[in-house]
Amino acid sequence: MLLGATGNVGGRILHLLVQSPLCRKVVVVTRRHVADLANPKVQQVVVNMDALREQLAPHAGGVDIALAAFGVGKGSAKMADEEVRKIEITYPTAFASAARAGGARVLAMMTAAGADSQSSTKYLRNIGDKEKQSEALGFDFLGLYRPAVILGNSNTPSALGLVMPLFQWAMPSRYHAIHKNDLARAMVAQSEQAFLALAQGTGPAAPAVKILEYKEMQSFFVAGDSAAP
Image 1: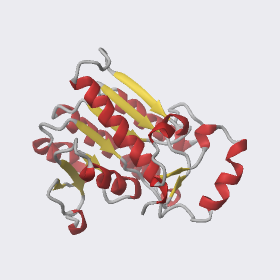
Image 2 (image 1 turned 120 degrees about the horizontal axis):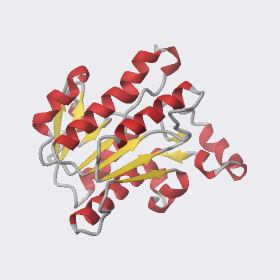
Image 3 (image 1 turned 180 degrees about the vertical axis):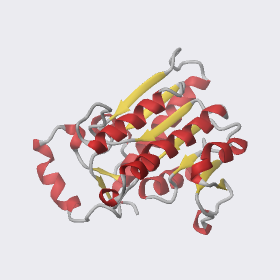
Image 4 (image 1 turned 45 degrees about the horizontal axis):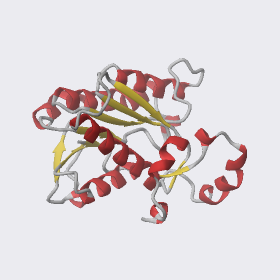
């Protein structure tokens, strides 16, 4: 089940899931029907986001993995904090809660580098709260994906793709720019690995939380994938 399929990272996640032989069906949660998402593997569920958990519940049964690549994106500085928290925290948490109630064992949640519920920076504090609420749901495996600058993103100036690599040598790896395709690849591949381990009885005995920053996501990159559309 996927939240954020119409976004930059979520769109790439959907592309990978549709191609994956391990994936039989993708339940895509949207606010309106999107003709471009039509595919034999894809089931679109249109919801009122303020009633997301309740409206999604009938469609969440049998879901194994939930992936949330959903956030404010461009324009957050002009939004009231209450609205930002609704988009960054309330909606993704409601989605994850519905998935957990439906039987999902794995959750992949996109957050951000520096996420910290105690941060003095409002954005990082909000994202830290999102992580805490995700942990409280008790998934068997929770992957928290913390990108810094996301390249190939319509909200990110294309010039950064040229400039960032020139400075990354002097930056902590957690703040290295990551292409949207590489981020999506990491979220899908790690989630599939985690679920297979759980299904085969080789996964963690207790709920596990894994934080994936740039360095941890690198192992899932595929040569040439970040150049793909």
